[in-house]
Each structure stands twice: as C-alpha cells, then as structure tokens.
Length: 69
Image (cartoon, rainbow, N blue to C red):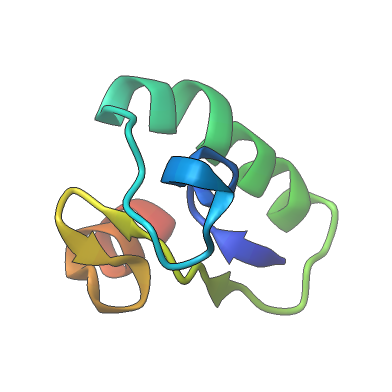
C-alpha cells in the first residue's frame, strides 16, 4: 500500500511538497482509503514522500506509530 498518507493532497502535485490538509480531512478521506487497503490484505505500507504537519511522512512518528498502528 503506498503512499501513506495524503499523497494526493500535495501542493502542486509534487511528491515531496507539503500537504494542505488538516487532521480531519486526513482521517476522513486519506486514511479511510489506506484502511481499506490494509483490510483487503496489503502486505506492507510505504510512507509517502510529501510532508504532513511540517514533517516528511516517513519521519512523522505520530503518523506512522500512532495513527497507522
């Protein structure tokens, strides 16, 4: 499953750009899609290249070890 999370919301469509979405939009739209993938049997999850809440998704502890787990 990739790219977790908010990849489609990156500014200007750039993979490494920040996202302009809040936690509510992230949870209600982007995380629902990821959850569906996990429930369908995704073998793994790849972090997105973009930033969420000022941190790259791959380095965002709250996103990866809090929300994802």
